[in-house]
Image (spheres, rainbow, N blue to C red):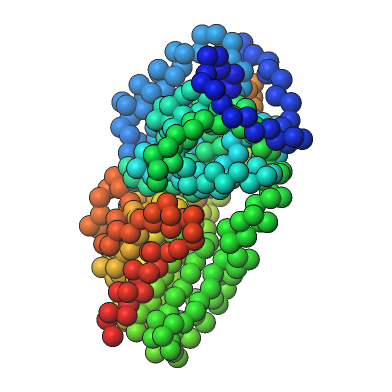
Length: 480
């Protein structure tokens, strides 16, 4: 699918001088025999290394998916075409830590020099809306529904993207969040769907119902990086991964964890809960929206202040092996598991007995016994969802917002070597360690579900209002 179309309706043309790089030269095609070799390495690496490959998709179904993809390698393909063949196969595993990426040079070009779709979007209820625009002269095109791009209906485009986007299990939020709020739409439009600049976009104004079509040039990533902080300063992430504030004379504590790393480490949680105790806070709002994870032990540490008895956080940590036949293709030579880290059991699998979250864990002091309100969405993933699942299983919080992104009972991550396929240079990220959480009561195919579902509207997102926090504050104030 190229960007050129014929017989299109009249359009308004908006040129972006100096921002559109020359179209990338047509890449060389690789012989099918070389691609078949890469495909064998690709399949073998996933089947050998991924200890949770059949957690959500049965082996028979994955075998059919692999076989069907392999049968399509009958003609020369470029590395990008080969990547497009592999992406839905990886997504079919339904593991959010598994990924296939284009060759490194194309990744760099997508980040900096290839002109991409000039909007960030919101994906909501199967529709796509413009949320931020990056053209040099602002056209005030945010808040519009995108109905088609280069004559391809948005439904077809979105279906193609979702089929190629990894995510844990059947979470209803993780794939739309990654495509929209996570910022993948412009890149996927090029790398997966195959639509290039210029873009003939059919818009619909959801307020008036009026439609119009514009022809817009793409914008390079380096220009986006320059204009974004100027045009959308409130979108810029704070320097700190965590912060704590108090409302209503200290009665409500709001703990925001943007990532389980950086400032959320060290004594941050110890000091935070000491302050919460000093303030005599009655309610604690824990905001982990858009938190993609981080260090496993920090999620457990936060949880340990919310329980008053010893507990198990993980039920098991499983790996298929210590060394793998695909090791020679692993970037930077990673992928070997130290013998001291694991214990081999009778079934032939290896269990990580050295993880700091393994075994019986002790509560931390001071214990917070008050009301806990947890805010989450489709960006709450990995370590964050481990924390949420443990909290949910113990019925220790009220959950507000949208379904989280990670599997309720665990994920496959830990060590994630990158396998570089030798001929195409396509990269495959293969997580080796499957986590089984010591939880119960959730849907084994879904993530943590909200007790109080609050989904920000398009207008909320455009204006920067926060109805999820608003609902949390309402519930906190109602408990006095």
